Amino acid sequence: MDIIETDPKALTAALSLPENLKIRNATVADVAEMARVTQASWQLAFKPFLPQDVLDRGTQEFFQKIWTSIVNKPKDNTALVISNGRHIVACGASGKYRTAHNPVSRRVCKLKAGELYRGYVLPDHQNKGLGQALLKARLLKLYEQGYQRAYTWIYAKNTQARAFYEKHGAVSLDSALGLTMNRYPFEEVCYGIEVNSVFNDL
Image 1 (cartoon, rainbow, N blue to C red):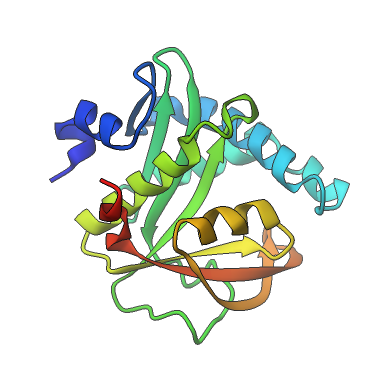
Image 2 (tube, rainbow, N blue to C red):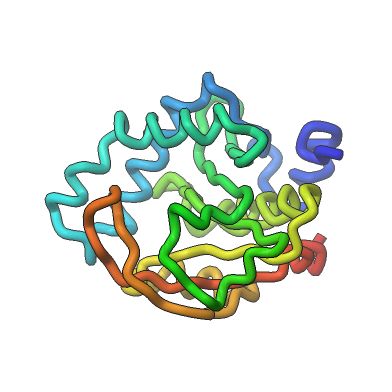
């Protein structure tokens, strides 16, 4: 059962989203706007610690290709957006743990393991509960798909994101060098979270 499709109003209320905002599954038609949200959020969050030449590669075109790949593989990924009816203000993805994409870690139990990734909120909509709603909705999707535990890799220097996940029950498990854009090595931290933790507040 896909609660996002069957009862979106109830889910919106349960996630404590303002009435003017709705969460829904993403479509191919959303990709360009999702890329715009991603670029704005990505640049703001990572500017303090990523080199400028890396930041310059984070264009809307770059992120549009990534979101197109995610949306076009619904069996492997789930892409969600939060919209105000006119524009997308947040987006995120989840799905089966991507072993080939992430750093190698013996602390990751790949049996029934999901992953949280690509979570972005427009800068002028941050600190309003959208990130929390997006996290819970993605955990709910993983639960519906039979996953028991989810992981996410975060830049070690991204203290804001690390604090956010720790606040919501994620536990730091490991650290390793990861590759950004398949070429730039940066230290990343792996966090684990129980998928059913989403029900603590619903």
